Length: 106
Image (cartoon, rainbow, N blue to C red; front, side):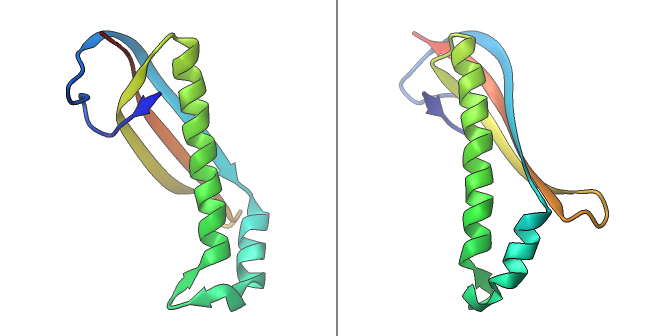
């Protein structure tokens, strides 16, 4: 499955648009507890353990989107947008969302 942020795929023609597809991942409060517990991992203002959790959330959301596109018979997803956000005021939860347009290629 080709997944790209661009609206087209160089050298390929889009034959049909199958629809908007998306994926979401919610990262619970334990993420932040673990983050503060592993503060010793912080080097140069970065936390390797926290970044791994966010990366896992991103990968989960992307896989959900790809699975949905495959169910629609798509060959690719174009115009992908990714967003990270906090949920609630003090719940300590984050959400990763991705969306794009599922397409078939000639």
